[in-house]
Image 1 (cartoon, rainbow, N blue to C red):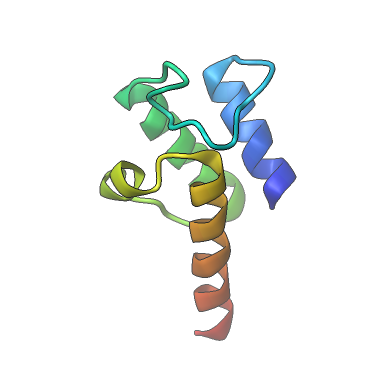
Image 2 (cartoon, rainbow, N blue to C red):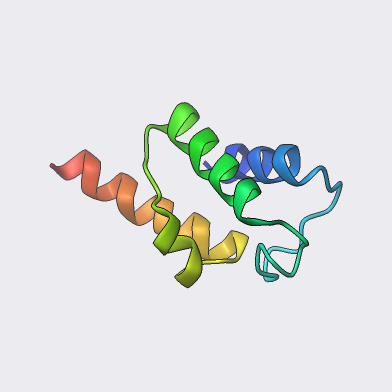
Length: 77
């Protein structure tokens, strides 16, 4: 999952190197890019992240942690 998420972030941001502890906005991404990331995550992983969640989990590492938590919930449901 980590590699897939990183590929999404790199694709949407068009940055070669993603600092996993910088927020999406510190990386220079805007709200449209956040929506693009969210849509690609859903399309590739079938896990939905809402816009409001990105206000709380704005770094790559935070996003990865939340995705893993949501994946576990989906698998146990």
